[in-house]
Image 1 (cartoon, rainbow, N blue to C red):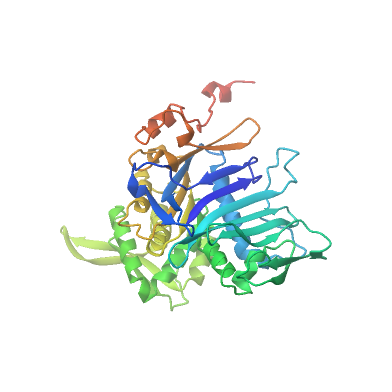
Image 2: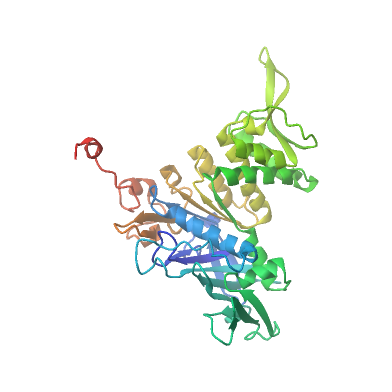
Length: 442
C-alpha cells in the first residue's frame, strides 16, 4: 500500500510536491479508507482512491508520469548501458537553477509481514548521467533502519563508472555485503533481475506491481488490451473473464459477452486495422478476442454473432483494457495510477470504475486508485471525501502547484465540490481569454 509520494524537479513540478494517501480523522464515507497496523502497533488509515483535477497543461499528468518514470527506472535500470544517459531524467527546463539540477523522488509504502505491515521509504536523486543518491529505509519495529544508502561518489566508494554499495551495514539481520552497480543504474533493479534477496526482491516486486497508465497512450493501451486477453486464456482467470463480461454489459456497449480463443492461425485475413501499430500488436498476440452480439429475427433472439474486438469502438476497447486491469487489481490487490481515465469513456462509467475501489464488496484487497482528470462530473461529494481530492494549476512561470481540497477553509466532506470548483473557489481552472483576443488584428 502507498502512504505517500514526493516529487521535486520533474518536468513542470519544479518545487517539492508531497502527495499523501493517509486519511484524515473522521468517519465520513468510512468505506473510502481502510486501516492497517504497522510493526510498532501504530494504526494508519489509508485512502482507497484519490483524484487530481486541473485544466489541460496544468501539470497533473506530470505527477502520474513521475510515478511511471520511477517504476520504469526501477524495472529497467539494468538495461541501461554504461555509456548511456538516464532517459527518465526530465527536469524543469524554464529555470536556470533547475534545468541541470537533480530530480528527486521518494515513496513511502507498506508491505505485509506475518501479523502486521512494515513501512518502507525508497528515495532517489539523479541527473541525466548518474544516480547521486539511492536509499532504502524500513521500520521493522517502528524504528528506522537503513537497508542501504548510496550517496554522492567519493574515492572510497567508487571506481570508473561504478559505485560500490554496502548492504546491511546498519541492519544486523541482513548481513554485511558489498555490491557493484554502474552509476547510471539503480541498485534495487539488480534484486529483481540478477540477485535474489529476501527483503530487497520483495521491494522490487512491489514496484513491479504498480500500474501506471495514460488512456491517451494508444500504443500502450493496445498492448494492455493484448496482455489482458492473453491472461484470460488461462483457466485460473475464468472469474476475471466473467467480471469483464459483466462490466461490458452494464456499460451498455451492446455486447453480450467476450470470447477468448488461442490464436493458432497465422493467416489473419483482411480484417480492418486502425493503423500499422494495431496490426503489429495483433500479429504477436496469442489470443483472439471476439465481441459477441445477439442476433434477432422478428424481435426474437435466434443466435450470436462474433466480431473481432478491435473492430468495436475505441471506447469499448479502452474499457476492455482499463476495466480489465482494474478488475485484475481489485481481485489481486495493488495500486493503479491513471491519467485521463475519462478518455473515450462516458463520465458515468468513469465514476463507476472509481466507485469500485471505494466499495468494500468489490475491493476486498484494499487496492488503491489515483486518477488525474479534468472531467468535473467526477468531482462528486457522494464519491469522494475532501482528503481524496487534489487540484493542479500552473503559475506564470510554468510551475505546477498541486494542493488538496482539505487545505481550504470551510471545506467539509459534504461540500458540493463540483460547484465550488466551477465557481473558482478551488482554483485549478483554465484561464481562457475572450473570443476577441483570437480574432483581433494585433
